[in-house]
Length: 441
View 1 (cartoon, one colour):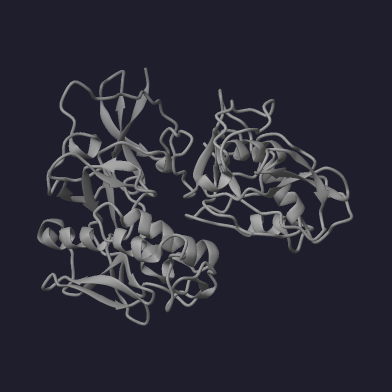
View 2 (cartoon, helix red, strand yellow; view 1 turned 180 degrees about the vertical axis):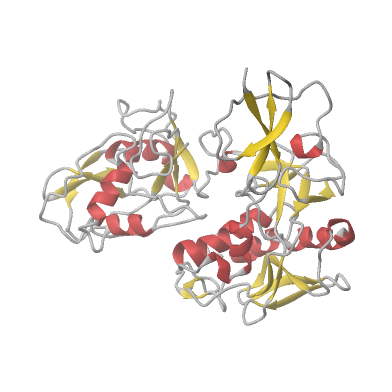
């Protein structure tokens, strides 16, 4: 007995109710205390927004308008292009009428360079090792927009500190609708499809719109929504419009939250090298917290020879060696280390992820197994041995630093030549390399 709430609002202060004694429908102030009985609907057909088949013009799961349906099968999509999608939907309104493609933060690359410390208005978001020409070509395709947007955000905001509201991809990256946050700035091919369906989607201005595709180090793609002409423009000071889109309707890859296997591309753009055998592990300070399942490694070394820490004579309290302890070791030691392997790892970011760290002793052992392709079982009980030349998988057959201290003077290192490990002086001149990793779930 008594009155029950409905989900229907009566006015700004009241909502509709129903009395279960008399059956009378009424309204009550929203601050009242009434009963609640949840219900659900079932037994019919599934619409586009709920995971069913979609057609151009339908409302998508994010509340946008579907403007592209792949002609056959699916296309590659997601942060690392390892997911598959069938549809594209667009936000129903522009999110900026005038914004630049890039700001002046010092976080971008000269041609043929891996040093990302130059003005992003004039230089590339892609490093030389990432393949600048190949990356620019790939960035044009349908499905590439999220990967592009994540890379732009990684350089301008994660590294450069630019506000997301100050550049086109940042605005799209920060946009959310329909409870979904995987919106992005479309690639140039996606933007061309959006132009073709501009009347169906609606709300466009007779103006140019940014694409997320980089054309050259200081020029990006755009499309004129009057004539549909693909064009380019300087990343700055040109200020034009932004319409976010999102892809959906396929399978979820590792980089986008799906199941992962060793060798997959992870959410941070690295290579998955460790899969926890059962359940989860804890990595304090990592985004995954107590629900971590995987470790990924950056695709290249962050240093070819560096001391462990600028403080080479005091214990830093980072003696933990287990899987999952590398992040806490790194963040703790970084409060003392002003240079060296620890600081390099603590400062690293990629693909919008900042929770990278110097691997613990046992994490580095797992990385050695992957680098040398030993085929050994995962777990600290098995020491890396045998296998192939580490160079085959992009490593160097030399020593790598861990984040685990051995003593006040020494830290653990691991040889990717023969699999042996031992302690080395924290501050001694060394050729020890740095390869950062991160945990995720």
